[in-house]
Length: 470
Image (spheres, rainbow, N blue to C red):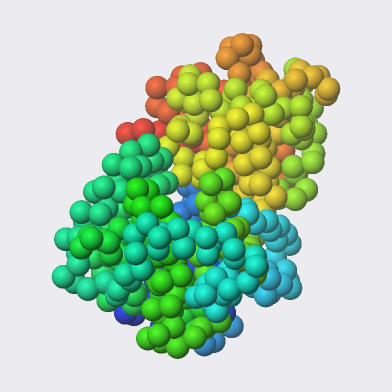
């Protein structure tokens, strides 16, 4: 049986050879990514029969990276055994086309829905043009470099050494002041950058910095895998115009001088940041690498289109007209309190919070099979008054049900009717086992859940847990 453990710097030398086996080109399957995001994403790993198994938390459940090694023929059997033993869903992230085809050709999998989120797609560039900015389409980048040279002199880029670390810390302190409005994701990325800087050799990283007037004003950290240079972190002070493109092309040239010419540069994703997306597009990517998510054997492909008559209300598919009410449902503080979701600290929210955001996020979750979401309505063409969700759908057949209503519709029996109908659908149509949880002090939710026939099975300091009666 697989036994996963948290990834730490001490594990790097064991794990790196397996990460460098992959041909996907995905930045997520590199030592730098594992290092930077190990804590935030709870990256875990184990090696069994010379195969690396790894996972990270997406939502409240682990999603597995594709198994890596010379012979992964039995890897799916091992993962199925693991999720079965631990009552987990079989979910994958950073799946390429080849892995997706393998999953879909496996007779054990009835449904393999898949989708990618362009926010996490990597930007790939030609190494030679990154080193020279040669050609008409790079005139903007050359102009930035020329302006930098006119104002500050010839760029002074050097390999980073241990003696430079105090200068790096001073530069990062100034960088933090310039970016005092950074969000939770940006703070996590900055924390990961510091961790990477403190373990460059352990994680097989290379780094260079840009000097001006005996101080560091920019730096890059990267990793070479095959014929690709991954740039995991790149920081520059805003007060030095043009420092970013100068640091980028200087780093590529330093790599070329020391290691020879490569084929590609991977500058990773834009995390949905409009400014970052514009910048990365201006460097003229030759392609984007899309990383598929999939939740194997999810009932979402069929169930998301079903309408359920719950008597006083209907459970119907989401529609475009629900965007406004769904935004209200997700941002109302009282609803969110009992739902256990704090959107203000959700690292997956990387763009403006508007009426499209939560609707689009939920549609994506259903596209790759991670949930089934229904709108609660009083009539078939009526407005959304709440939501029922099926999620945490495990390999063993457990399905967690959640139900929430807009404030004006609470306390009228709509929740009990909707929850009961969803539980019956899970038992009688999907032939799976419904379960639920609620905060200990949420007496209304407890009454709603028990009215559907689920009974309390356990509790902890925060939640009461329920399952279907035998």
